[in-house]
Length: 147
Image (cartoon, rainbow, N blue to C red; front, side, top):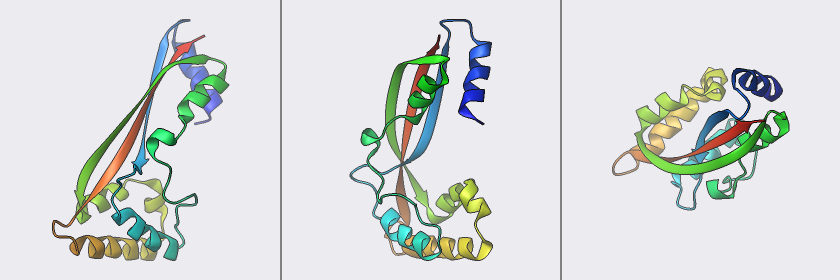
């Protein structure tokens, strides 16, 4: 949804001084991120589905909060606080693939590309003693006050 529309609608539901909290979760690449993601990034590149930006992405603490910028640009809210949370989850190949199956880019991917990617995920993780990867998540909570 267009940011001007969504913040105007949210502001319309709040009294002046009311608060809106928005959280944004994303794949994070802290300094100790799992090397699996660099290995599998090469497969994404091979199939024409690369990251499109610098690799690896900057660590979460070095990234700006896009929601805070939207709040400010909306003219309806002022940011009163942000908080970054970074955590990690362990996944087997099947669990990770099930997660990827919920992402629009993977859903829209050509079936042959997707199958090749998933075979490579399984192959890379099968070579690990525990067969698992660690995926880091960054969650940014942004709180704005209605003007």
